[in-house]
Length: 66
Length: 348
Image (tube, rainbow over all chains, first blue to last red; front, side, top):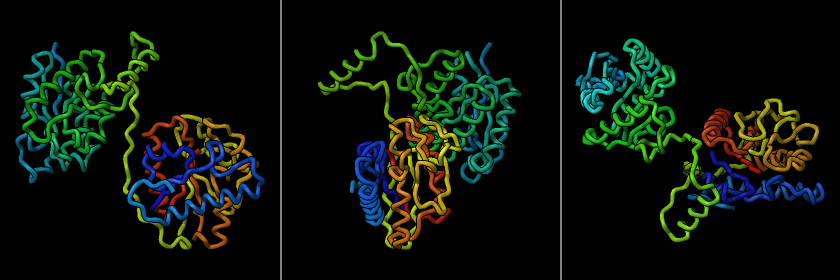
């Protein structure tokens, strides 16, 4: 089954061998941003998750950063 | 008095027969048979091979516990101080047999064990942590080099001499880190190393990074609207109170948590157990690490089939790579059995 790695530090994700990588926001809140309003923050998170679903739907032949 | 050694070999080297005799049950022969004669000679009287165990490779691999128990009994009966197995060269099942017997006896009897095999023999990866493996050629032509190297390492272990690095001692790295003293402090050694690196000269690291394996990318999901997606995280998200006591660093376990009916992770229901980053933001809203809220929305909107009702979580903070690998395999197996089609893994 395909796995997408949503990671704040892309080089680590690459070095451990993830094949589908989504760069995220920051280490303590990869899928959020506490400076935004709750609605804006959820929108940001949704955008990242939708990107992750696209990555899961894509065929890749090598490590790919989306 | 000479040290006493038991030597484990397979049916071929024991002269019983080839592939057709691979089911040969283990037998104990007093004294030396096959390669045990060469080993006995290479030990030069400081140690002697008191018995040789001959066992078919298929039999050993299919009955590992039974064979290990028989070898353990023989070790005790002969009051052996050490066990040697092989060399297995590039014979896969023989390598497995040598590795499993050595690792089991080392653990059960607390005596040194030494084997030898071709570095790409699958037995190396499986058993290098549990025994000392001398790198050998891929065929029996390498017997002449392997036996003296096995004898030399075995004698050092029997004499309880402190071992140098795997390179210096000539065995395959076991993945064991040891503390040692240097004349120069770390800062000076690091600068020396940097200067060598800048000059394009060879240098030896003191802290090898683990080698990560690579996985062939799996094909993409074609029907996302029908797919079950699971969440896994190394960001330490757990139910409030951390019921499984997942450690804040150097985690020794992972958790499996049911989120059936959970639409949003809140500060009263979920938190992070991770001790490697500022927990404030994840504790306020754990969706910032594990996006359950958004995936529920997508589930309702039929953009995905469903969110798997279990998520898996551990803390990726100084956690041993070997543990992470083991948990990853376990979690993968569970998700496969649960017919999950794809995984979102989040890391902090």
